[in-house]
Image 1: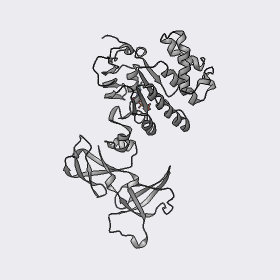
Image 2: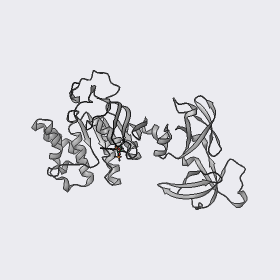
Image 3: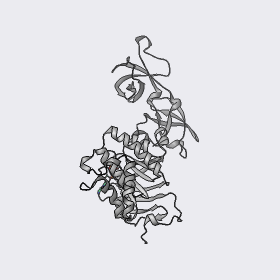
Image 4: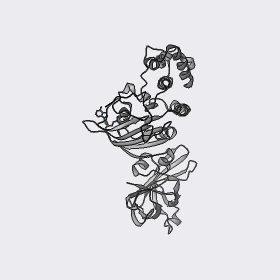
Length: 375
Ligand SMILES: Nc1ncnc2c1ncn2[C@@H]1O[C@H](COP(=O)(O)OP(=O)(O)OP(=O)(O)O)[C@@H](O)[C@H]1O
């Protein structure tokens, strides 16, 4: 096996993407790891790996970085098979959750470190460091030491240190998760702008939906070491294909269904509430594989029952309010349906003041906006 430096590699070898992860399996002795993961990342694209703690995101990132050799599979970068290329020669920039700056070096020296290691001529170092610090808006902090910076500023230095070497690939492992919410939101916007401006290709690991939506050109959803689905943030958040994704992203009510009629790309389904719904079958799947329908809380209506209208002969269902929670601009109302062991959520305007815990209501469903998900 020839060991190649990815940054100097020929781009003539055909690969699917700029970064091509092909059937990577990397398991730990005690269980855990990733199994048969394949992903393609285009040049200039930011791919987000999204999944709960322990699903294998860091394991995959470490394999891409060259910090751990996978048990099986190959990794191609910029036209070269880098599976056996040591981490230091892959020309990959990494930023982690904890920013591990050198405490005894100034901000400028921290950023310069990678350039010096790569043998960048001395006269070129200072202007590149200055430019990188300007990019992360820390131009005035060059002479400070890490201990004199806030957490958000330290993470900016870590980003500058990763950008400054113009890496072939930027790998980010929950780089914002240790920061408070306001700084996190601000930094993620800045990070996205920088990544776009510089045309950097990146893989960003997070368990935070908002971060995935804000940062990713595409999002790969992971569950116990496997990729469940890959799509644009819009696809993943508005039309997830799988129940797992819908549930992880909390897209709304997920209601079990059974198949009544299979019409190829459309299916007639009976919900666990007894309603009949016709929806499109997810592309490339069979009607028989549809496991549930998703219905946003905004498509569930509730009307308090007044004695006189207690028995509705319409399409509504009786239920009782079991939770009332404020979520930003919405009052999220949990209703347990009478007679069946099912709970639904309805989104109501925050100013609605006629709803009480324990109150009897009638629930209506606008199934026209529902969509089917696979098991
Ligand atoms: N060095 C190791 N030895 C043994 N098991 C490990 C090791 N590193 C990770 N694991 C296990 O492999 C699984 C995947 O871990 P990994 O760190 O890749 O997940 P993750 O999605 O990045 O999680 P988190 O978001 O918590 O960082 C977990 O079950 C973990 O306990």
